Image (cartoon, rainbow, N blue to C red; front, side, top):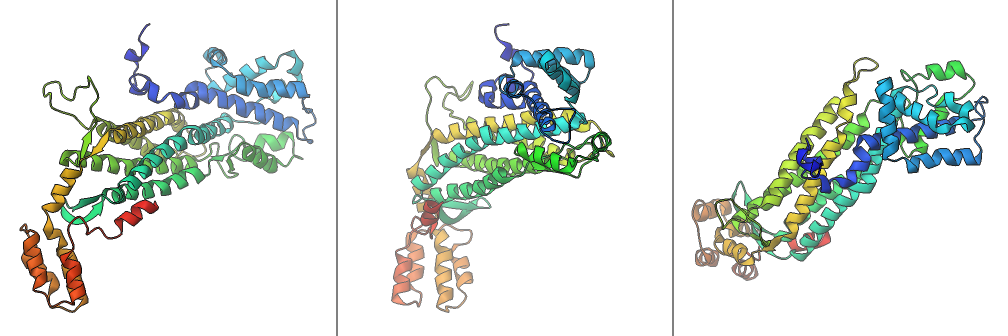
Length: 453
């Protein structure tokens, strides 16, 4: 077929396939298989290196190298072979076990029955999914988030001093700067980025119901707790010694909750930028040949921010389901988590599409300084806060009430606010400071805050 993307069931494998390519080797079924193979091989090697398991002597350098090379050389044909075996076994993890036994050949025949030794499928699966999350975080998510953070930080610094009217409840409020508003987003994202980067990803390898039952009956003299700890931590994961058949997925829930918080911050950003475009604070760079509306030729729509908001919402719906569902399991095991875990990549895919859309949209923005200044010049009433606060300092009567009477529900101009100030019984220095104030200069320390982020 010449155009398979046109028949893709999910836009992540169709319309957005190019934007999610980095996740495909991690969250695809092939990616799961590859990490299952890695866990099985490393468990076999750990058993062979333990002095108490005498029936499985340590592998030769050549045999060890051959096994480890399969982790790095595992390819699409290997995945297809496992799928063919699965058609016979009707069990995906058992198919991986049989695949490895076939790969070992006659040279390692004596070690074959130690493949998947004392392990339940969930011993392999929980570690494979943990490795997927580990790799997605380091290889894709953090680099992508850092790129977005850098872009927002650059914009915050570039526009640190550009005054802009604030809006609380949709109404004119004390001015800020464009850079400070972007710095707020950066600060929020930095906090969540730190939590994402430092989250421990848990794993276990302790048998059918978490008690090392089969392990201890076969080798009662082996310290299985210590071997299990060393093995899981050797994979770069946090060891969890207390589980049922499944690792309880609390760590995955925390991971998803953190991703959801990041996405919620970015939804907030997307909506605010959309609003500022609507107000005319931003123009969007025109792309030759691009159409904004099928019937209204004049339109330049904020499609990147709308695309981002939609995909972030999809991602969060899934992340919230994962966080609420995965830690739940009937008694020692049910299989409801299995199909849910297979969709992890979908949530991360929609998040990645959204993050890229935000970056693309931010690159297309041009600041309409004239429009921003016009709004400031038309809202002198926002200086009422400044005037009444200085009046409070010097003990003038009813400062709030007098400014309320002057300004609430009515527009005032420069002359009327300065006439009011001139009539106040204030020290000369304080009065002069208020008379020199304009909506564009009443920004507090916004510029400094924006530059420090």
